[in-house]
Length: 145
Image (cartoon, rainbow, N blue to C red; front, side, top):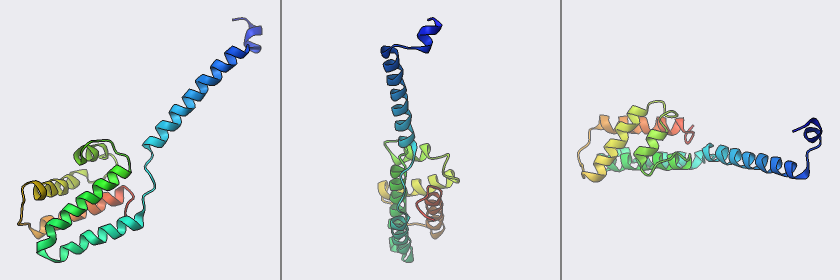
């Protein structure tokens, strides 16, 4: 390549360079929008969280409170576009965002036991711990203020 062709590129070279630049821009924009979480409707999640909390007033509805809180967190993980086929995989993907990831796993495992093992008897301490960790995770993800 001589100085003249560098200073005066032909139309083919310009078209190729423009095409490459366009592909790079499209790929970069796609990557940025895919990784950026959507704006969450905090009022919606506040209402759903209050519904889950209201189930704590009676021992008979404690299991439902834990299960609903777990489902709410999974919904937020999906809205934030964390990858995974299961909630466990999405929790793993979100571990860098959720401050107390280990305690969230306690709540998630408790919810799974309630659903799959038909566990009936719960300790109040376990229910409160699970709900506390779910609430903190929802805050970390921006669903609750």
